[in-house]
Length: 373
Image (cartoon, rainbow, N blue to C red; front, side):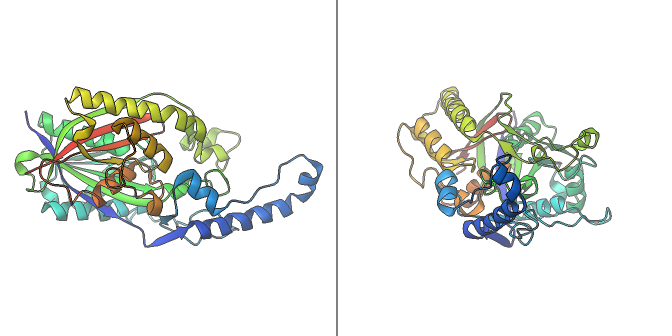
């Protein structure tokens, strides 16, 4: 059987960022404006006033300190409270494809791979810019890759699901080189007027090149095993889609943006993911002590801390479970890949690690890897 490996990764980071202080200032100004506009209803007791957000609340609840975004001006404007991303004509590359291409070029360059040697493109992300043509096919065209491409969405677990899909293509012989990209413009689906979630997401794009071992560069990662899990839950949801045009409330209703029951998610996802990792270790005849590093999904620092401690039986050190959440915020499917990209070059030959995602669905994915000699 052909052995699949991770040959290289790529990362594109927006040039603009928004600090917690800036985000809180814009939210509080919006809240004051909203309260003034609804003063009569508030006084009558028919509506609740909007309460202020604060930096301490955000950092304690999430561990996030800032986030990168594709557009800052609209987000920090109390009269807009959303990213200002102009539509592009069909003849111009779409913004989601553009940022995916940027990350992909880095991965290809790091692997010393010509795009013409790639057989397939998978675009795995939480929110696609459109239904069709597939984003993956546009990315494929922009890079000059032959073969095939398609989109896949498993929310925050899209990247690990994409890695297993690419690895399966390699194992079966259907492709020898698969480019998996995760363009995430999460600010586009975030409700910046919701105090409980206005700080959660950031924007980014990542790429992973999955290839047959015999064609991979010397510095690659063997894929020891993967596992995927889904379990239906309404606790994280986004109802935006083309059928919204048929609904009486129309586009713009709050459920067409990101909504979640955060406490329920924490309570249900943490034990599910920890149990999955422990069982996967047993299946692969590995022990937690064999893991040099865990690159966990970057959604919430407290979730990561608890999952890591359940797996290791103790608190993980920052080196064992690195975070990028503080500067990137939650970037959905890209989070664990950013952590892997930024915190893997120091690993020695034979070191083992875990790329793990979890999120809406519920969905969870594990990818166990070993640094090649």
